Image (cartoon, rainbow, N blue to C red; front, side, top):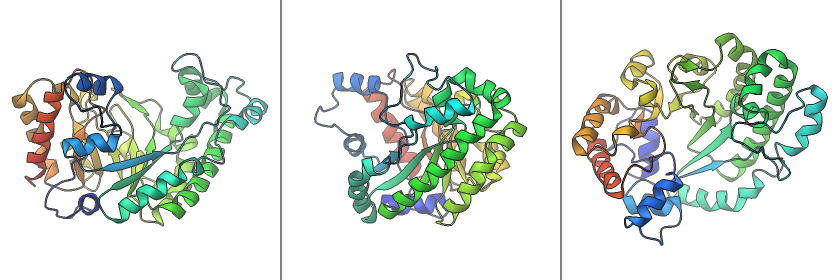
Length: 332
């Protein structure tokens, strides 16, 4: 069975010979730097090279950029570049975002990877900015949260333009490749749950996803939402308009995948392995896999680190993690 077949069948809750061996998020640069010093070969330059080195299934993500070449980057993390939060200010600022060439910048690479996908040895996924994520990215964290109340017209203008961008991106991407799933970057939760209320979500987020999901679902492509934090309360909000899964299911934020599966038996999930135990040795990692194993056996779940592997994890730690991942993914 090929990597792509395993992925497709697992996401469809069908039986496979083993679960996919996926590291859904690339490793931190600091983690790779540490591993280089500990013996990771220098000739391994790409994420795919490193996946192959560890014996993981190869996947390729294409995160389509929403910022143009003239985008004025903020000076600090979390600050905004779009500061004149008026309809007129947005009309002037929009020249810097949602570039028409976004897919074409990657067209050659997409076509190259599509060939590998058709040979069934590669999983391809398309990553898009979500309707919470993107306004925050251009406004900044604090102004964005106020804007739901103070600049509602501007919020709708931004997300309407983002919707039209998504439609164009999907049409152009699908001419080159049909992704095995589509993920939306949202990060809408923290350790106490959603950052906005359900009424705010339904006013500013739902209408755009609902229209876009109809288009995506017509191509029978699974949609998985990427949000850090405790997403338990968010899940039915997104399922309401057709999203079918979530990642990364951060354990330290309180996500309980067993409870999540009990509440939503049809939910596709990726992640869930507590990264904070990866440096604690085999017994701790085995205990974590035992926690996940009952859900692994139910299908619709691909175990993976619940975010990027931190630099506190040594190369030997990670090799042990991968060996245990392979062992437990065969226990289904």
